Amino acid sequence: MVAEAPVADCQSSARYSYPRDLALFVHERWNTVHPTIDTGLLPDVATLEEFFSACYHASVLREEDRPVTFRATLAPPELFAVEARPPDCVQRIDFARPLPFHPDELQRLAVATDPQRTLIGVHTDRAAESGLSIWGLIHSGTRWLRDIQGGRRAAAPLPPVPVVHVHAPGNVEVYKAYGLVGKLRGGCLSGTRVSLFESQWLPAQFSQIHEAVMKRHEVARQRARETWGEHWAPLDTTLPRRIGERMLKRVISVLRDARHGGMIIFIPEKAAASSSDDAHYLDCKYVFEEGRPSFQLPDLIVDILNRLTRLYGAPYPHVPRPVGWHEFEATTDEDLATLDETLFEIAHQIAGLASADGAVVLSNSHELLGFGAMISGRLPDVRSVARALDLEGARVAEEETANVGARHRSAYRLTDVLPGTLVVVVSQDGGVRFVSKRSGRVTFWEQD
Image (cartoon, rainbow, N blue to C red; front, top):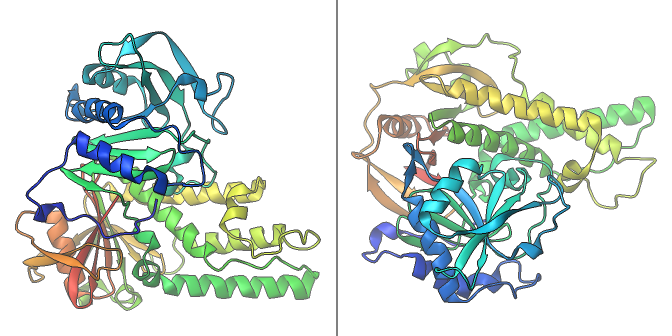
């Protein structure tokens, strides 16, 4: 689910792709995703095209002025156990009789099926006029969203069958269980998912907080050994970064779901220490008092690291490797569960602040400085920016800024005059852009 190739640049192509192209694309790539699991559950290209076409046409409909969003899977009902229940398993619910598989029926079912929790079950029906029919629903729970929203527990298993996610008009993503195979967006085919958290530059943006957290953890480890004779387990040093990522993913997810839009600004420590009168960059309406703010992500991360390594330390030397993400998501320890819940509450708090007019402002060390911030309109305009075509921004395409909204233009102006700043812009339609100045030019990444 991580981007392994450049993001497709459809704007430079005169040819647009459609559901049949997506069916061919998925058929060619199917065995490259999770190749170690059963690959014999893929229908022929004609059946895939029929499945994707109905989903595609349903995506451009609206239900009482709301977009039609849903998940559907092309799989026989017998692949799902009747007695199973989420969140550890998926629950199968059969209709008394099959329903016709066409866009209007998907439109109606989309209202009653939360795409975050439910899939629409579709399978071949020789008696159906279209060849496919809807046999029922599959309740999966929300753990599968952890890669997007930052969840901790593993998702309920799905068989290796085609699963379609429809998020927006003309936007069809195809998965093999939970592994992305291909997507059709804006007439463009792609087999990658952009996850900037897998880049090198984004973690480097927050290296200061990582170093501070690790130093505090080592101090606590040494004190526990010298004072109480405790021997904590070794720590995977990537864990603090992943915990911070989960918090930011959840903030973005909440803003996306609210369909309100918002902006989160991370500014360098030097700028954070300066007054707004000196900087002339931001006018922050709600400024938090200096000192110890109510939001302390570093404290929370240190508490998680300390509890996890202590839990897996002596007298339980059964973990030969450093403890990290696997142990964090697998443990049922109540203290860790409470700390994880606190992490999510902080994320919702920030998302709530970002829903107000203006931006939320944090330092790169994740100190909450204020919200309701307006970027100065006196900053020089940025007439063109670089759209990143890969994770590191090595390949870019130049774009004019005349046709984007005020929120994006202000983000470009700020990052241009204040190097080291990162701005996350969430649009009302759910689009997400990360904006930063890289290699001397304002660059943005579209985040899936």
